[in-house]
Every structure is written in structure tokens, then in C-alpha cells.
Length: 285
Image (tube, rainbow, N blue to C red; front, top):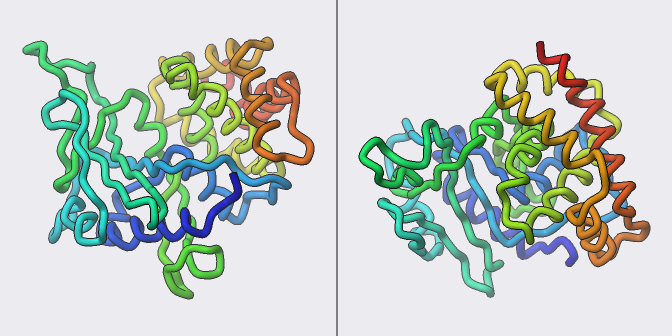
């Protein structure tokens, strides 16, 4: 599926609508991978990045912005609110129509404690500036030391010549989060997540020294238990071939790449790239 100007126009609608809140928000998920390609340290890829019709936006779970709520701003800019799930408050998403890019926006927040409150009720969502964010474990990783990229007319986002700057996860944080949550993702999404890891490593293969420095800052911000889990899982996921990697090979082959990688090539890029960026388990001590 080729990169679409309609997709970029739809994301520009989100950015423009949420402009007052951008200082507090980080664009994560599949769009983060596409947006990281705009950073000055990113190298050019000879294939199109993986596409997604969802825009996941991370918030710390609170807001200090005064004025119109995010909910009102999105609705004023043509997004339709959709409620889902049995949580209280229910998860809210915001959708543009097919003719406008078919973009679906969801909000995420860190899960500070467990998924339930002391009284046994669900603690899976939180209301922030009028929207409801879904609480997820490990989301703090994506909020650590975010980078900035500028969206403007020149790079395909109709936001004027000067454009608008937004926050995205730094690559080590993005990679670490992908590894930490991979096992808990639905099985059908795991191969695509593996390919996101592979493609992000390729994108920054000429900047491993800079990423290694950034990875140390991320590691210092994480609980040691999370770091141990990260190192254990990357060894588990990329130490041998499995169906996740084989299906990642299939997705790469079907994406129209001129030289799609084999499952073992994907494994080696992930294994060696993560080693270059994060070092060994003992390096965090």
C-alpha cells in the first residue's frame, strides 16, 4: 500500500485540531514509525514504510492546558466521536470519514498501578481534557525523552511553509516498547510489530552511536525490572526463528519491497541492531 497524501492530510487535520495540546502529547504507534523518517538522523529507505489508518496519541494522563477540550477541538474539526468497551469512562475514539482519509484517533495513558482498583472495579481508562484514554502498561517508555519532528507543506503535510512541530518517541524508546509489549499483542499483530522493529533499526542504522547514548537515558528512567524484562524478551524473540518472524517475512514480501528480507535476515537485523543500540543486559548495571 503506497504512502498516501490523503493519509498525511488526515493526520494534519489532527495536528491542527490539537495544536494547543501538542506540548503534552506524543504521537505513537504505527504513525510514529512513519514520522520518525522525517528526523534528521533517519536514513532513507528503499521501500515505503508500513501503513496504518490509526493514529495513537499518548498523554501523561493529565493536562494543564486551558481553554477548549481536546474532545471539543476534534469535533469542531470534523471528527466523529465513537464510544467502545464496558469501561467507565468508556474508551473514546475519533474518526474521519472515508472521503477525508479514514483516520481513526485513539488516546493512551500510562497504567500506574494494576488494571483494577481496590474495590475490584476496572481501572482501564482515564479522562483527560474531555477525551478518554486507555491505560496501558509500559506506556511511560514512549513518553521518555521524546524527539520532535516538523510537519509542513514540504514533507507532504498541508500545515503551511513553517509547519507545526510534534513529539514522537525517540527510536530506542520506540523499540524498547515494541519488545516489551510484543508478547501481549494479538497474535495477528505481532509479525507486523516485528517488522516495525526491523524497519526502524534499518532507518537509523547509520546513527547507532547517537541512539546508544539515547538508549542509556531511556534505561536510566526505567525501573530495573522493566529493563531486565526487555533484555530477556529481546533474547527470546530474536534468538531463534519462529512463526512471528516467518509471518513478518510474508508481510515484507507482500508490501512490494524490491528485496524483501527473509525471516532469518529480519531476526539478525533485530538481534544485532538492538545489541548495538542497547548493549548487553549487564550494561544497565
